[in-house]
Amino acid sequence: MATPLAPHPDRALPAEPGVRAIARRIYARTRSLPLVCMHGHVEAQVLAEDEPFGDPAQLFVVPDHYVTRMLVSQGMRLEELGVPRRDGGPVETDPRRIWRRLCENWHLFRATPSRYWLEHELAEVFGIDVQPSAQTADVIFDRLSAALSTPEFRPRALLERFGIELISTTDSATSDLRYHAMLRDDGLGDRVIPTFRPDAVVHVGHDAWRKQVEQLGSLTGADTSGYAGFLEALRRQRETFADAGALATDHGHLSTDTTPLEDSEAARVYERALAGEVTEAEARAFAGHMLFVMAGMSVEDGLVMQLHPGVLRDHHEPTHRAFGSDRGFDIPVPAEFTRGLRPVLEAYGHHPNFRLILFTVDETVYSRELAPLAGAYPSVRLGAPWWFLDSPDGMRRFRELATETAGFYNTSGFVDDTRAFASIPARHDLARRIDAGYLARLVAEHRLSEDEATETAVDLAYHLPKLAYQRRTP
Image 1 (cartoon, one colour):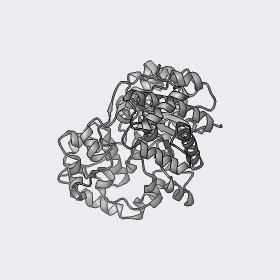
Image 2: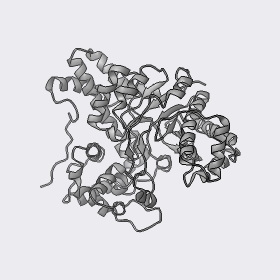
Image 3: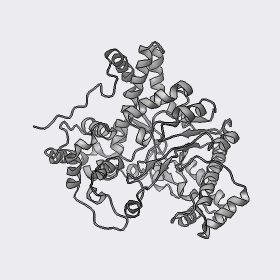
Image 4: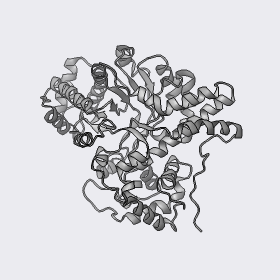
């Protein structure tokens, strides 16, 4: 007999009955609020073209590195999960077989946030009422396939159904934003907006860097054969993004170093990079320098700056060579913020046009560094628990570690940070439940009134993301 799939209405709320009752009332005020999705990785092309999702495997498995990394950790190969190879080599192309692999290994996801999100998607988005298993895999696959073939499950229909008021994509500095132009023509330009991600052009020395810089120059009409022209190209492209509705930039660096270089030294390193002669130490110094430069540009154009350091990306080089980035082998390392950010905060930390949102995957720095920084500098906001920390207990720990120093209103609200489009409401729902539970405990301990807690929950779910990502007035 198949095990029913029926997510409990009180899931992730506190276990203690009295606190749970308060949490239910708080959550009831936030559960139906519109979703403000200010940091994610859904492709603009998906919404611009509005084509049906191909099949359950392409929706739930292949693009979701949370899912594939767990299966790979148990001995499966990415080829078996349908992940395309860079060299065009053979991979599994039968979506039913890929879906079966997920269902046959459903037990691996017990107590993980992936299990929470997948159950929410299956039950509440697609109406699936049996738990995935080897026995139910084909039945669920057929029901999902039937739903995906209907207009109600196309991307734009789900945008409406999910109540997504605003969604931001993440776009490389060399994007021509063609799909955002299509969305603008269709009246969705104020609802689906780009985010400027310059990592590929500011991290000098990698294989594709010179090609990326040439593309940037071609797009902007700036001469990127020299450092001054490179900066001009970045300014022009940021302006193009802002004209397309962008509110923020996004920076993924290994460290938080923001030490500026003298212009002559930055130009020298840039020229060495163009010549293919840059050293690792020079590349690191240039990356830190460019974070300082990007902060200065944010002061000029008002784009909110997001920084998420402390991840050693593509830890397994053979996987990176075969499949590219974002395949589950990005591993957290300790992050230091206080010294690294001092140059940029001394320069711009009190500037009214500057906003810096800080994310981390090293939760040891929440109370030691991040909360004190956000509690001191008016430009700084704490980003939501991210990546390995966007879990029920990770979110609780974030509130416990950060709130007493930074308060609630120096945080940026929740961001879903996902490529899995159908998981967006599940992720926001979990955050709203965890915040309701945390606030309910404060009410039960007579540290907040219930009215204050409810107002705070609404702010965290809806108002704070809009305020944190509001473009500064240049």
